[in-house]
Image (tube, rainbow, N blue to C red; front, top):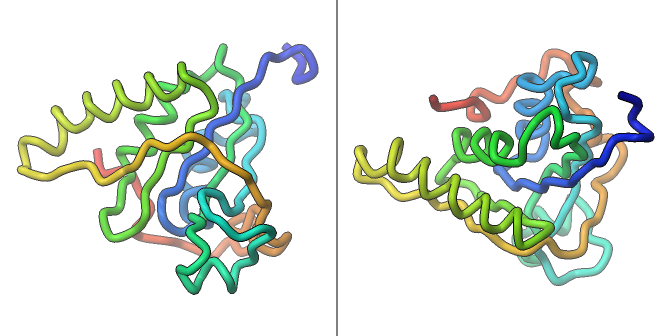
Length: 164
């Protein structure tokens, strides 16, 4: 199926550092393998400052989260599966958010995080810290941040991995 004829959706996740989040998703869903992820973009969302940049977001005063926006084909990979990957890589010390683009995505995100909570966190007496929020204004990160791990093949973030 050609990309032009594909009905695409957008998923937006904040999983701490956007380099690691993008790298994690690209590792598990390489676009060259036609696995449903068509494009990823790193950027900033969830804050109150217009046109933030890396330095301003890094101060913690803008309210933005470093995030990855994913354009995907839901006939190949489901939103449920992507939410599952996001929650399987949750890092409690970082802001972790699922920014939903529809009521359907919100319902799926809530259901999947409840399932993950029951299966993986409750037995360890832990709580998922991921927020589920409506998507807000998106700002692309600077070009040098885009596809960072591909431009810097030695980059590795041991914190960004699937925990199950």
